[in-house]
Amino acid sequence: MKSTSTPKVGFVSLGCPKALVDSEQILTQLRAEGYAIAPTYQGADLVVVNTCGFIDDAVQESLDAIGEALEENGKVIVTGCLGAKKGADGQGLIQAVHPKVLAVTGPHALGEVMQHVHQHLPKPHDPYTDLVPPQGIKLTPKHYAYLKISEGCNHRCSFCIIPSMRGDLVSRDIGEVMREAENLVKAGVKELLVISQDTSAYGVDVKYRTGFVNGKPVKTKMTDLVQALAELGIWVRLHYVYPYPHVDEILPLMAAGKVLPYLDVPFQHAHPRVLKSMKRPASGEKNIERIAAWRAICPDITIRSTFIAGFPGETEAEFEYLLDFLREAQLDRVGCFAYSPVEGASANDLPGALPEEVRAERQARFMEVQEEISTARLQRKVGQTVQVLIDEINQDGAIGRSSADAPEIDGLVYFEPSKTHKVGGFAQVKITGADAHDLWGDAI
Ligand code: SF4
Image (cartoon, rainbow, N blue to C red):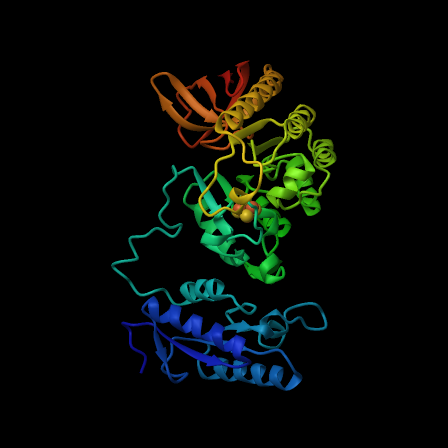
């Protein structure tokens, strides 16, 4: 007899140890959410079948198990390796044989399986977690949110201790990332800021494994993720993008207005010897050429970067080289830190540590050069009309940001709001004035 109080899930687990781990994770999550596990088909409200698609016998065994579950219970969700297999016509093999299954996912798809379970067998009420909105608890204003796609980093930059604290790169499942993004959009978020330690490396650790986004196979890869985010119809801003060649592939999406024409690329330095000493990723890339190529595809792109002045061993000539790079690159937004020895960083042991005054003086010279560049670049916006996302309205007027401005770190756009403007909404603003950081204009 099925109980009406606690929803019960039947579970059939087939396949290798990796599939078994997937089964364990799904069962753990089901129990954690308050579902009961039913030992028989008849006692279950729904059945999950974790399949194997390795050899023909295993495929047949899986298909038979699905058929049996459909016959005995009727409500079946299929997961596992066979879920990713295609039939001769390119369609999913399982749907072709068993069209009545409720949903099919590939392997390692805990989040997706749970989403299907929730859809077909609502979650039991939990007084602790039910107060948490689907998008999670956010510390940012309602209209923008950070989307973290991975944790840790495979690089070992000599000034940085992040890998020793957070370990190597661990990419989140693309289906899970996209579900979070969709929930945020449903909750009213208008701008997603993609963050990680190395956004371009997303998926390297899982060999760009194929995940599932709304049932469609999508690779765990930055370019594929950006494509999927571009479909959400909101502002998508990319941070911590190293200039690897595959970054070029997302520029057409920026040019087409699908993703904000904005790249935050932490160059840190320009001189090859210093970059090598910093052990920077992509230090051998031809960055000036790459920037020129990006601008050729998307002339409106805003490029933000950060640099370190006064790195141990940096000569005056190497610093001048950096300033020349800056003048040539004409970056839009730039932050510069005087090198500071972080405890535990290997750069502290490098020879040629510079006195604090020299580090501070180089930082000031760097910012002076950049200020001129930023002023000139912002001046070019005067007379243009830009779309602005409104962050604040107070007695002095409205404060917002254009596609060129990430929250907290870039500039602002000030204008007089009309009655229809509201925080979290958009405005079209004709720019009338600019300084080195911010813009002023009139709403139109
Ligand atoms: S600075 Fe280097 S080591 Fe540190 S998180 Fe960034 S890429 Fe990784």
